[in-house]
Amino acid sequence: MLIRHATPIDAPQIHAVTSAAFGRVEEADLIEALVDCGHVSLSLVACDLAGEVCGHVLFSAVDAPGVQGAVLGLAPIAVAPEAQGRGLGSALIQAALRELKVGGIAALVVLGNPAYYRRFGFVPASQYGLTCAYDVPAEYFLALELAPGALAGGNGVVQYAPEFSSL
Image 1 (tube, helix red, strand yellow):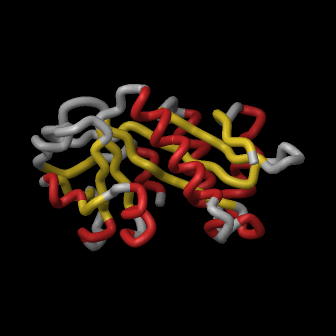
Image 2: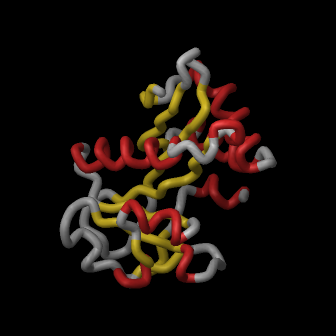
């Protein structure tokens, strides 16, 4: 398996993998909209030995009130159904975390399964005074400091790029 930056030529495979993983096209269309509007901060793909995309993770900027430094939202992440259960999603996230820390990103947020994202160090964002703009249970909105103390001043509703409103 190879993890690398996504390129424009990967777009059809990213769309196919994301649609298959979610069982619908909305998340795949979201990726295209974020790319088209220039709102992608990091996009990584995992490729099999034949060079086919079998996983993808995307990060985009969010507005996190009171937080010092750049904050990104992890969404979406997808692994082709036939490649799930092999640690591919974890490998994508770990590769992204390494790159984002070196790149000076202060913190991350994600709306997702707490049991899954805790393994990477995410905790409820409410611990930092942050809430999600969407009507979701608080325990599913998580945050991770990449720079120590970056989330200490958090105090409000985290806003995602407008393209997320289509979900």
